[in-house]
Amino acid sequence: MKTETQYVEFVNSLRDTVYRLARSIITDDVEAEDIVQDVFERVWRARDAVLASQYPRAYVCRMAHNLAIDRQRAKQRVQSFMGVESITAMADGDNETTTNDMAMITRRLISQLPEKQRLAIHMRDIEGYEMDEIASLLESDEASVRVNISRARKSVREQLIKLMNYGVK
Image (cartoon, rainbow, N blue to C red; front, side):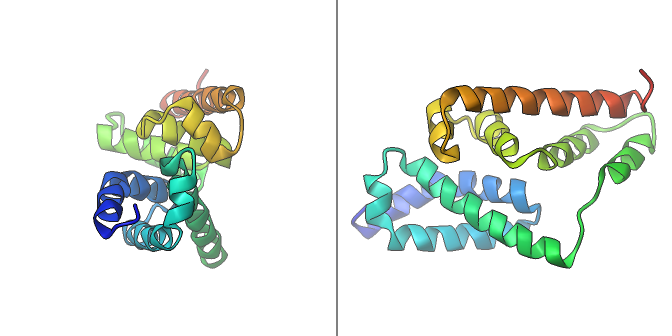
């Protein structure tokens, strides 16, 4: 990545991944795109460190994650996010919940997970990363990553069942 051509190829191969990661944290398309730009500017400045990393993709995703979290915290100071009550109201609207509604509800439920669970499930199920790469990104071991993914899936599944049964067991 010492040349501009190598940098452009590296950036193009990761652009969508970084965008989706930022979008999963921020939930704002424009802000996520700004994060992508900032991350790749930082990658250019730190290109030697990125190359020296065992997992350059995970290194870049860590940059994107940190920047997105920083922006989310700043955003939270200004406004509050939609809570579970609003999600329940959406699900209660009609009996035929569309696929788009279910996807939106699932994204909201995932966004409410603890940080490590949210990142682990996103990187594994959406981005398709291997366990060792996710462990490197989360600065954890593979067993912890597996536990976080399992707990995240279980939590989302339980919340979806609860919403779809309208609280009836």
